[in-house]
Image 1 (cartoon, rainbow, N blue to C red):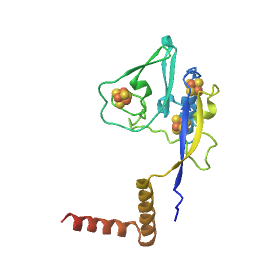
Image 2 (image 1 turned 90 degrees about the vertical axis):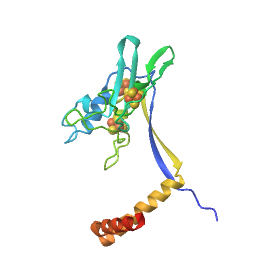
Image 3 (image 1 turned 135 degrees about the vertical axis):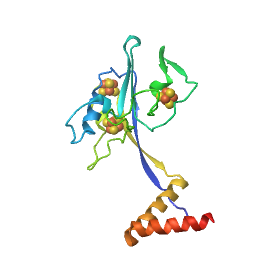
Image 4 (image 1 turned 45 degrees about the vertical axis):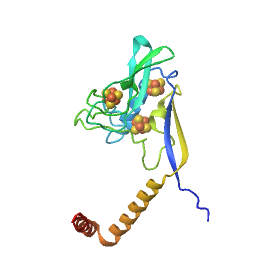
Length: 184
Ligand code: SF4
Ligand code: SF4
Ligand code: SF4
């Protein structure tokens, strides 16, 4: 029997560096959208997208916040693309100790792009909507889910069903007892 592979929607923002003019509208829109209440303030330091600017080299490079790392990497590369030089950090999405980007200025907690997922969903993320130069383009792709993700989804669904039937405390107690038994 042929089983159709499970599919997921992968969201992507394509960046065209040749079109970016460094206007930073994307930073303002992102910080406004994530302010509480929404659009009550705009502060690029709280934005999950930052534009790396080197005016003299005519370099404008929008980069979105990814994961947090407690250690910076070593042996960084320098890239030359169409005669312009970029450091590896300019492309890097992580919140890392080597720079202040992607850290919430009041708490120092790492910021991460959430693709503006909200209810109801936006037709396009805010940074894409305000980019008048089309340097940012939103794309949705359908991809097959790998076996590990399917298993994780099944475990999540199973746990959710157990929690709704027996309550979170009972489930946590049982898992704790079980893990002690298995360690023996
Ligand atoms: S809004 Fe578009 S053109 Fe302006 S800085 Fe952001 S990516 Fe670049
Ligand atoms: S920001 Fe630079 S130093 Fe930090 S992890 Fe990225 S590439 Fe490495
Ligand atoms: S997709 Fe949304 S959260 Fe991510 S950088 Fe753009 S505006 Fe910010």
